Image (tube, rainbow, N blue to C red; front, side, top):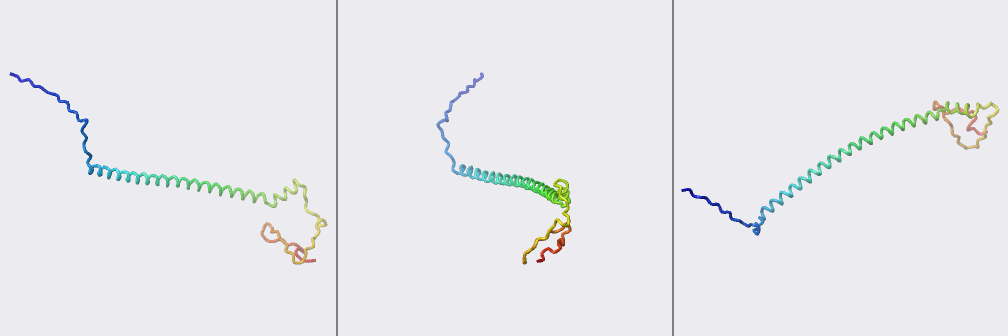
Length: 139
């Protein structure tokens, strides 16, 4: 004879059960969360400093490049100013465009200099002061 097996299903309702929180487990969890937060903050600080350092390095290189360009422009402008101040260029413009000529011997009149006066002296292209005849001497 075969025995029939019967399975009974018992419905269990655990919705009203509350498991008490273990204070030691809660402290352990909070401790790990705090340590994880500190570690994450350290990693964040390190990466922020690293990328900031890289940005500043790029900015320094950019400023060095700008400084080099400014130095080249300054040199070009100095050369241009020196070319524009050239006495030969000024003489050519005075003769060609303004129609000026070298004064004749009778056109230049000496000026009487008061006693004790100091005269400024212009320098020639070689750097030596020009010889002025009678200049600075009381008459």
